[in-house]
Length: 624
Image (cartoon, rainbow, N blue to C red; front, side, top):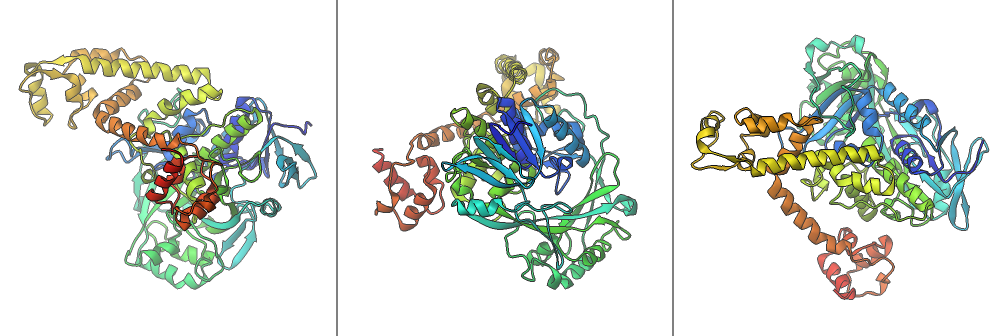
């Protein structure tokens, strides 16, 4: 057994798996340490990947050369593109996964990744030499040396599970918590605090009356997560089911509130605002007499179901009584109750944009330990941390993604600039440049950047280049092809759109909201012939070309705004000022700037408490 590595990753959740795979694929000799090899990439909460803004992150991870999109496509039992009724900036892919096969596929990927070793154990301490990370020690007495360590411990650091008044130390149900790291990092000067999250009960499908619920099927078109070519989804596709709570449910829950750890003072940490427990819902939305409930299968063949919308830490008897008032669940039996969990996290404003600690060189943190929630947010941080741990060992420039380049860039910038006071979840509203950060164009934004540092493969880059060429070819044809009114007007009228008074370019018709490329190909033989010439990924290329044409004005305008704001990102200020001595700045600005020590004027402008006038003062001091 070799005990010397370049990069060590602590924890094999969604962040840890991406970090380990990225570092190893880049060429770093990497060790992944996990408490249980049978729980690699465990879906601790819902058996799904993606969702609003989250799906965009997974597409970005895939475009960078990450693995979670590939694993999701291979283990999906339902796929949907959310928000289709809105513009393409809001379209968000989401898949139900087979929980067990998802974990097994990730383990298969990791076990067959060159440069990557796995060790089943618990890390208890970091090895620190000359103020820098030099490795880890474990509960079994092993010491592994490395120049970079990535901590992705999820909810395991001092994890405490709550179900009613019952408390169990654990990182997940039936899994032990981890101790030692938090205390050491505090001694090293890293600020820590506690957060809370929760998960619903799991139901026995044999005791559910699905006939009384609304069935919800997935979609079967070309959309998926990975940009790589795959055959149709290999697993059997399964529906979800929709029901709802009612006043009787709420009354049982309301009477149980004194036994809720959230309301009796047992839990003191802050939970996620945007994924509240059912008891929080009935308190916060006291005027609502029902809430939607989604019954989601946990796998291709299992009878285990996840009850989305009913997260709870109430005593199990109250959970069961409330669930049995819901239509279709009158006789339901549980595999296990819902529970809440408290865990340690670290102040992300003490991180650089590379996710390296400002306090301990060579230490990187990713995932829930940075105060985030969600598999996708974890995976996005994980791949960046893994890349930059490799770059640190190679003494190369870190990969830093901008807010106009990716949702991952927005996520990391929000964390390191603003910090967190509740579990951070990504939304499309957090991004200023939503029309630039669409789910369809993540490869256009990120693949070349990843290929340049050696992570995205030659195959992936060539695939993107062929797609790019095909899109440009189709858009060029549409912009250059002329249409005469007499040949198209009857078709336009049939489609409910205004007839032409004179000829026009085909691009002007594609831009109309009532029309699209495929529809127009029915009336324009030359366009149909052009589409028939597209040999590979035809639907994907047509969709991308149409988005470019229909939204070209919005895309150009947002690009101009992003380019202007880039000027602030190019003005470096880290280490230039002693903010405490600049009396022309507001007191709050001096304190915040000194604590965060921003890299650029752009980052300084996004710090809460730093006003536009403070930014102007910094610009003057920089000679601008």
